[in-house]
Structure formats: structure tokens, C-alpha cells
Image (tube, rainbow, N blue to C red; front, side):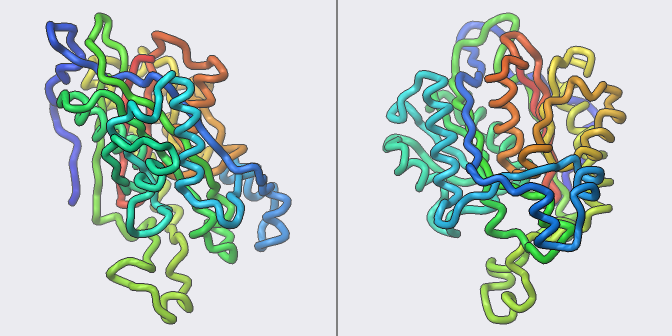
Length: 350
């Protein structure tokens, strides 16, 4: 279903006020995990007909991480989650909710979040996966935030995790150079609101199913169940129409960013850091031009990790926090796009 941006911003969330009984949702810990194996552009030259210079100049990517055989998405997710819990000083037993954003689940059923729950020993948590492709982490943040604001849960673990190497067509030079594996996680806590407001301040999400054909993984679902025909047609690999994805990604992310800022009464001048989905350097540069924001206010790590889909923003966020780029009081804008076509933007004060 197509979702248009409203002409007027929706009412400010109650979490933005510091009235009696008001709650806000704040990130109290971050973590990430990337596999040890590094695949460089030079190695890519030995796999497909491409060159290190071509990949770097067109994508900004010089290397990516590849999970080892037998290492599943839940393994990456659980490692990132442990780091986030340690940073927050929160025990797994305190977690009420686990939401895992992924398009590369361990299996169709049960959810990857349930495997993560088992690895962590978070027996009291409600667990489910959310699939919104590269926008999945921001979608998951918004779902978890509202569940916490409802007052029946206090602590949530939101994870973006992907093993995209399992779904990458290593014969397709247009896509195989882009993707990598990894996981990022955050611990959310519902706390009494303060003034000025801290935590997640606003969020915009949207989708346009008319553009679903631009970025797909067609095989293995109910429309095209696994068969000899789907295997022969290489339908179990990621497919992308690059030029069209670029055009819509830039437009949707810029509009979502402005919409999220408008919701909380900010402009881009109020933003200290933008943490974008790490898909392609040219896309991020185009967003900077649209928003009139210099590139030194974007936190980027795609040179080393490539596109990790739902994991890209939480991994970058964790790095920025641990490197003390993002400091207490900073206003952070996160923005993403993904297959679906989906998009989202979230504003928070760290």
C-alpha cells in the first residue's frame, strides 16, 4: 500500500512533554558484531568481471565482512545484543521485548528473534521479527517505542542483523559487490520524561508497494516456492534495478528526514549527526545535497562494511557512540530506505 507524506505534521508525541506521568523511550546501550572475514575489492576482481577502482568510485565500498559457513543471522544478532546489554548494564532477564529486523532470517519459522532469545537466556521476553528490508531497524525502533510507551513493558532489545552473503548472487557483478554481513543492537528503556526531551523524539515511516519490483528476493516464499525451476532461475538471490532504486531512495529519504524533523520542531541546522543507511556513497552525497547538509555531519562506515541492510544503521550508530562522535545531548537523525519500497527517518536526542 502506498503511503503519502501528510501535508501537516501529526501531533507531537506525549513522550516529548515533561508532564506528570509522561514517558520517553531512550537508548541506554548499543552494540555491534561483524564477522572476522574481510572480502576486499581486490578479491572481488577474482570472482566477477569488475575492478577495484570501478567498485570504489561507484559505491564508496572497499571491503565487506562475510560470515563463516554455519554462522547464522541469529548468531550475529546475539553477539551484538550481548554487547548492547553490557553497555546498558542490563541483564538478559530484564528484557521484556526482542524485535529483530532482518531479510535473511535463520529460517522462515520460527523467528530469528526466538533463536536470539534462546542464546541470550532472555526467557521473559516477547519475541518477533520485522521485515522491512533496509528500513527494518527504524521500523523496529518505532514499533518497540510504542509498545514501551503503552506502559506494559519497560525494556526492549532492538536488533538489525543480516547474513546477506547467503542470498547474494556471486555471478551478478551489479549486486554482489554491494552487500555484507553484520548485526547491530540497541537497548531501549521507557523512562520518565525530562525537559529538554531526550531519547527518541519523532519518527516517519512509509512504503510504496508499487515499487516492490525494484528490489526483491523472489524465490522461497509462497509465490515462488523452492523448486528446481526457481533454483535454475537463480530466484533465491537478491535482485535490484539500480538506477530506479537510486532515484526513489534519494527522494524518499530526504522527504522522510524533513518530515521527522518537522514533527519535533527541528530543522537540519539543529542536527549534530546524520546516520544514514549505508547503501552507496553517491546516494548519501545526493541526500546531503537535497538537505543542504555538509558530508562531515554524516557518519559513514560503508567503505569497510558495504550494505548490511537492516544492520547498517545500528552498526554505524554503535561505532559513532563508542568513538565518542555522538555525545550526550547531540541530536541524531537516522534515515533509511529499502525494498518494499520502504523508507523511514527517526530523530533522537542522545
